[in-house]
Length: 114
Image 1: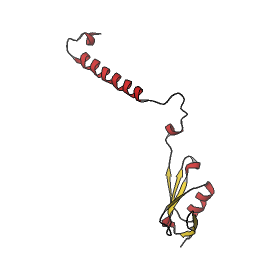
Image 2 (image 1 turned 135 degrees about the vertical axis):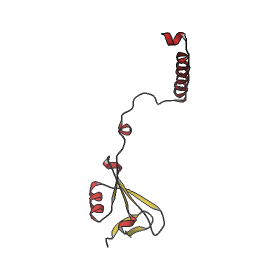
Image 3 (image 1 turned 90 degrees about the horizontal axis):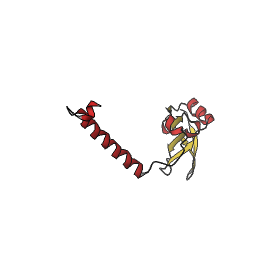
Image 4 (image 1 turned 180 degrees about the horizontal axis):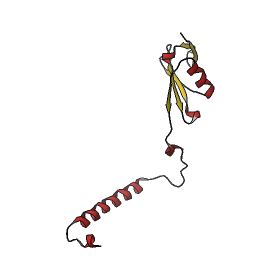
């Protein structure tokens, strides 16, 4: 049976089994991590999993959960953030569009003739 040694910030060195370690490997390597619940204090400990640690843990038998960050998260955003007034203007604009569509679908409507 493989024994994995890790460190709890409260209890110090701990020994874990493969089943006690959760390894999450992200498409952005800096966001990968491994976690475990310390048997001593019961706290979840989460630490960055560098490529070297990922290699060691997977070689030891820990199954990696893989996830990809959506491209939108990595986009560079410029300008002011969307505010309450922007959302309200958008909602009111949608309401006008619905009204226009309803008028256009009415038989004999001047809007439908255009």
